[in-house]
Image 1 (cartoon, rainbow, N blue to C red):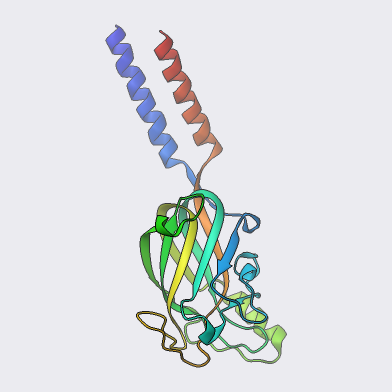
Image 2 (cartoon, rainbow, N blue to C red):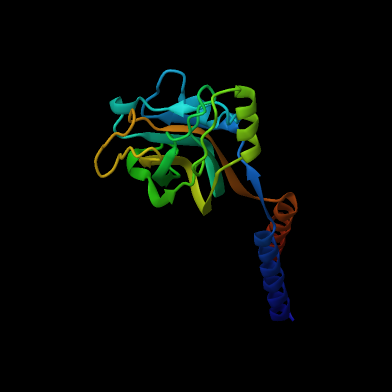
Length: 224
């Protein structure tokens, strides 16, 4: 009888775990918890703009004074990342869209210090960006409404990679600037990015309850 009960307990726990794995919600990571660092800033385009929740603000590199354009996000804690939404670079004042990122390598780290040597799982990404769209300078209000109506241009799947830090190593821009394998500027050699939003897989409350019940069952079984 004891052996029979043990089998039932094991089967019940396997069922709990399978249900817990199935019930996972994808949630946006709060921008307020994300901090950003970039390799340089141009006037009017600060790194904080990349994760402020506003696709109308932007970061822009310092052009030829920054020949290794990099963006680093600290998400505040380790997440199982599902995907990220990217608004590529454009400028509300001019309608210019061709300074956005074309290709980059994305690196991930779970190290709380964000140490350089801790980054791994490189992911090479090619972005669609504005797909040839060029926005008229005037009237600016109509341009802004057009941009917002178009929405996010690129959704990059991250497949559940574990990370607290996410680093963009930019390799080329839409206007033709190359950063790797060597720096070859085009136009003024700058790169721009407006907004990045990260989404993580988070167990739903019901899932956490199932896991708790499974743990209690194990404890009870152990005491017997």
